[in-house]
Structure formats: C-alpha cells, structure tokens
Length: 332
Image 1: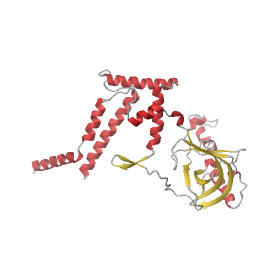
Image 2: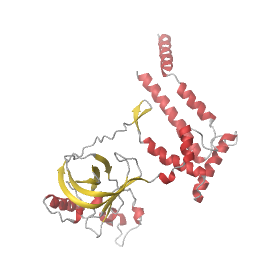
Image 3: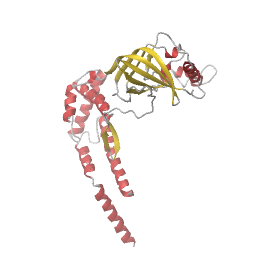
Image 4: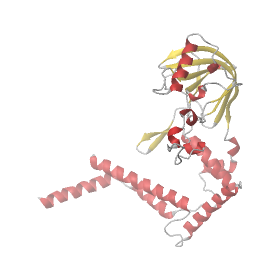
C-alpha cells in the first residue's frame, strides 16, 4: 500500500512538472531547443504576436479568443469540484447553500455574497515605509489605522451624506432572498468588536443601539447597495447586482452576528459583465476542442503525457515487489 502511494505521488509530480515546464515555455516564448526544430520557434512567434497585440491595445481575433477563453474557462471551472484521484465532478445544478444563515422568515435564498476587502499595500496609499518623520520615527509607525482602512470592498454602498462609520467596512456577508417583485436583503455584521480596535467597538455600540430600538441610526441610512459577484453562492462570478429603495425591516441576533434586514427593489439583478468578451469563433472552437489558429503541437510534451497516462501503476508495483524479493534472496 505504501509503495503504491509512493508511485502515485511520483506520477503526480511528474505530471505536475510537465505542466510547469509547458507553462514556463509559453511564458518565456521558447524552450531548450529554440533553433532545433520549427515548433518552439512557432510557439514563440504565436506568443509574441498575442502579447504584442495586448501591449498595443489592439483587439485582434487572437486577442478576442484568448480573452474569451480566460473569462469563460474560469467561470466554467467553478462548476466542478475536486473529487480525489486527479478527478473532478460536476456540482449539483440545484442551488443549496450549506452555510449557516438566519432564515426564520422562510423566504427562498437566492444569493449569498461574502464581503471581501481588497489587499492593497501601504505604497498604494502613497506611503514610503522607508521614510522617517521629523522625530526620526518610521512613517509606517505613525500612520493611523483609519487611513490604512480606506480600501475598497466587494459590497458597495451609496449615501447622500458622509457617515461616521461605513457599514461596508464591517459587513461579513449579504444574503439576498426572493420577495416577489422586491427582495429581502440581510446584512450580517459581527456583534463582537475586534480586540483593541476602537473603531470596531464604537461601530458595534451603534449597532447595539439599533437593536435596542434606535432605527434612526445613520448606519442603516443608505440609497444603494451593489456588488459584482465573486465566489458567491447562487450565481456565477462577474455578475452585477444592485438594489435601491431600502426600507429597514428588522434586526436579529443570530449566531454571533446582528442581521440587519431590509426590503428593497432590484435595480440590476445578474447582469453579465463578461458578455462583451464573448466570441462566437472561440466558443465554437472550444466546443469542438479545436486548436487556436497558429497553434503548434508540442510533440515532446504529448509523448510525456501519453507515457504518463499509459503508466500502469499495478504493473509497476508488482515489478518493485519482485525486485524487493530478489534483493531479499540475494541477501539471504
């Protein structure tokens, strides 16, 4: 059993490095024998043509196909889940959210979108961490956390005023439920402040006031909430959802969170943001498994893949067993 596992691991890494070498060859535009045969030179030319067109901002047919493949292949990959043994299986088409959400109202859950924060660096805010202030202290040490927190979030909110606290900085997830022509939108925020974070503590105190009956809070006063789907449940990536005409309905204490419940009107519901990148020629080639125009065959890689696929693990295991037995007889 252990030997079979080692064989499987060896085969896995062999295939992995074949793929890595192929990717490296594509990126660098060549291989070890660029001048040997015509295939590597043609591959390099194909890559250079695509990259040159991208750099020039020229939308060639090759660019259209590459762009189509990038967006639609990424989206299609989300339909599958790894099932072990190098295999993947298609997910169930029926939407079934397995997470823990408040659903005492019994309305059908349509979308669950987590709120992600963009991971920007200090340099993105114009901060040079190598500089020092007049006192000789590093500027990095004197930056306020409020300044660092000025980042973009998956959940976007519009208001008619500048608030003390932006709820989008504290939202954990948004759940969208069916409500006829309208929608129920649940906003989840933690009921516990982050330790040693003054802003978090003040925000939670304001939400506590809402829970105690202060429904005139600025936290729940906004005109629009929107997001572009990203790793969401119930929808593909890169679809636009936007809601308006918010009416606060309830606040619920649930599983360490406060759930702020609203009734709202969908403004955009699932508008596909990658439709503009759809290319009929690329889609047809993908369906027919056709090669892109100008593409070449890497015979060496194909031979290695064929050898890997033909590798008989059971036979190899028996051979290794025989070698071990022979080795034992020699030592005896």
